Length: 265
Length: 366
Image (cartoon, rainbow over all chains, first blue to last red; front, side, top):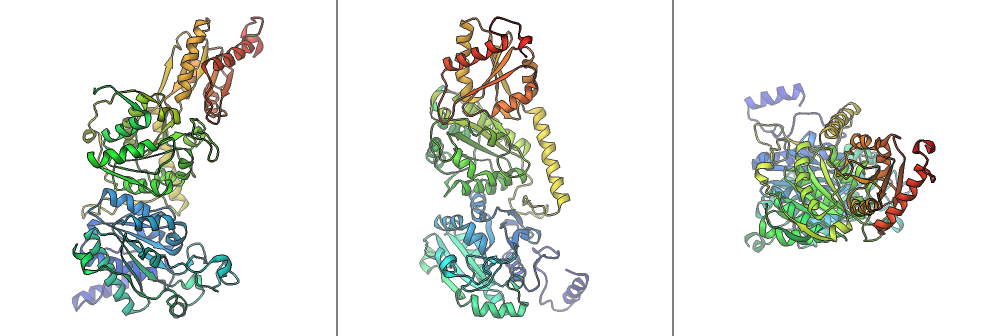
């Protein structure tokens, strides 16, 4: 937080504090581009960890992708994983630290392209951790190449004439795919582009961490997000574009929720 | 010391791992080492710990990365094609300085190759294998007993240096049955504290981060210097080798693992013919015992290196010998194993060349 921000927070604490940086989020400048959904998602993830008071019991896994440096910001024990292998790393951590809360934080290239096998098999084993899946339909870190989630017709650095379904296939809805597996306990798709969406995503994250205590299987919270730099749009335009082109193929809402019986048994 | 058992090398390795306090094993079936996964999936549920059959060797090594980083004593095992798949993960493990034990029960290659024994993965094991500047400590067993003994040693060395340690075996050592005893070993007394592990950030410490990412070149070089310093310490302290009948040897065989067993028989045959032959067998092939070999090289007329490959360790032998005596290589590949007689014949032919067919002094032909 900047000096100015600190002053504001101190002043606020004297009055009715309505908002401050979550304690579990380190007070450092993030590398994310202006308007990027990662920043908001990091913030609400750590708000949830504070709210549930589980900072000491949480171990996170950062991917390769834009969130590769997540461990610079999230003040919990962290692993940085090889590209696509976050859920295998999380499987190893959870196997030997079964009482801890374990989460992976992965992008679409990491989770739905190079790491598909690990993702599917973690879900199929019913691994008891949380996947936070940031779906912005592009490879942001490497400079805006086509992802498996890129919409048809979308121009990227590696689909300069637009994604062609015939050669690149259709965008993959991996969360829906995971929801088909018995090992997946909870699958939901949310966003962070509006105050209302942020509130819903927070609720989903709280649920997912609470479900982890039940030891019932994999939880996945997909966050449909933007990539202003990769999409070459302003933050505002990117959110509008996301609503029109991403949320139509990735509609927001719960995909798989546990039944009352699931929760009680 | 416990009772004498009769076991396959793969089973002995697995049993030793349990007795050495294995917390978690992640593996994928591949011949000729699937008995390890089979043994552990049968035993661990009864004796405590975690055993998980991964979806691939790629997943298995990354599970190892996770569980080792979280502070546990962990192992994976595989055979050649599987070990190739693990290389990226091993590079991460070496860089993040995580202790773990790996075993490659080598089969003939390249490619899908054969399931027969080979030593064709020596380069991969001893020269890094994956990307970047790193080494593993590599233990090369020659008997089923050593398949067990090196497990204890491997776990202890891994913890001591926070580095991956591997056992470089082969299909014959994995599949063959021999006598084995398991030493007294108290894992609780041997396991050391791991304050760097990701066990949950308590208020009394900063968060622990397991990573191999250093975007600033200065920081990346700093990490490399830490690793190189560690490797130099290992080179100074952890070299192991065996000498057999070298005191009066005029001919020295160099061989590791399975090949050394063939050579022992050859030495017996040679000595029956009056040729004073001996064996130099590295037990650690990384770090390689260069200096000890150099000392022996000065006393012999020639060195005959025998391997189950196209000539891999012989490069280290030549580095150690530094031209002090002629070095000859003979090897078989693709799962073929030379007979003691074949090895003797090759050595005698080379000895004749070196000594001269008319008994000229060896200096004349150098």
